[in-house]
Length: 322
Image (cartoon, rainbow, N blue to C red):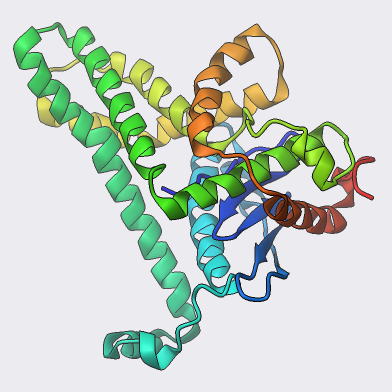
């Protein structure tokens, strides 16, 4: 895991850290800003997007929109990471040197659609692995643990929830040790600080951005920890000690858990009270790991990405873009 897209911005702006850059997303377009590792110049890529609810109103309904947003974030996230590798100059091996015969056959077979097919396949595999790691594995491990405690079915659900959270935190901790991921986490910090500066109506300059916190309560990291907590509550109502029934119920309810978690994050983003602070606290604490303080060059990249979005969506601008 490198970084999870921050799905909801207070002024309609979200973002994601990528390889040597930051993607900022508005309501109808996103801008990817990447610093080329060879020229050191900032390169910009823009792409228009159509909200799912514009295609089908049902997709904008509560709960359902959370599932749609999550899948969309995975697809867009995979695309911008792939694009950022190209823009950064880190993907400069010639095709003849890097492509196998199988790669060439795929290109001849699928043409320009190959990249999209590979991204959708990658997202499918990522979802399968995530469900296996964070839903199926905790059920199996909690059943093993319960052999020693012989707890009631409701207590078994609590054990399962804590096992799930432990696996998630351990996964985050291990990922954070990777050198390349640490740099992405610095760009994650630049993304948050820039959005916080924007939402505070400060002028978007490096000095202003540096003053703001690298934590943001609507970050995708917060969404994931909320998913862990919501799943614990939801699964408490599904009391059975039959292993295969517990696994099936967890898998089938993944969309419900994701949808509810999205609504909680969306609500937290629109309110500021003691309950919101309590709900947001676990995610903010976890961001101490998944974000790092950026350098000035990283902040410049994040600012350029956000300014590009604001030029196309001036209704979000306010007074903070000069």
